[in-house]
Length: 292
Image (cartoon, rainbow, N blue to C red; front, side, top):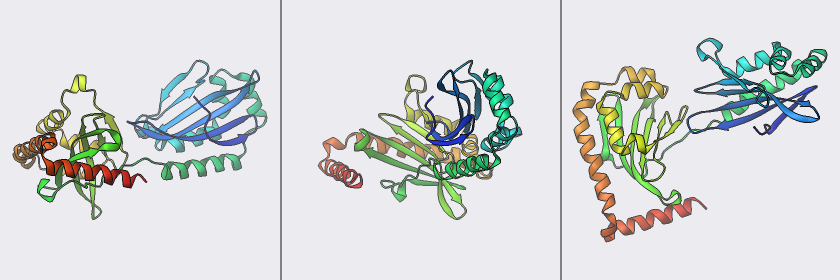
């Protein structure tokens, strides 16, 4: 893996930082590099991700990968910095680089350098986090269904710049007095995906339509199957999940499904409707202006 862009020289080794964005996960990557045989070699890597934090001994050697248990280690980056302070030579040795471990033991990384690594890493973890804020520009008030503490909004999204379109289902609720999107299901023609906590951790999962089948049908089936609570909990809103009125949701689902299918049909037939074609052209122009 390439060397991180933020580099701290720490004597016999370099410690680097890079914020990594993967579709289902994200977080700070901490690497330890050292000179081995005249080459700059990655010795250790700590992927301090939201969902699956883990670390590697000797990524360029044996690449022993171990998971961090967030229940016991707490904050993955905090755990990483603590072990850089207290266990660095031992971890380098386990990676298979005894001579480099000896050099670090003879010339330990200064506490000032590690303080700088920690301060910069915590700053990057906050400022570089990826979140998504959907604007609901084409969602009408009549297409929002209030279901107890939830609001389920339907919006047919047209994204010319991404060459895709499709129905979006937004699951919303009040969080600290704000209208917050808890879940989003973008049932697009191209690149269909869904989000757990778009404004929180933004876990983004792309459907494999070979296994899921039609994505709108899959989404509605999850609601019918009673999975709404579990999905909201995974998005990071356990209190809201506990208050979901499942009986009311199931009673409202037929109306939500009916309107969702109507919106898809209306938009699939819009090429034969002059007014709809004009609206599509306006939408395309608006997207182009927004991109300037």
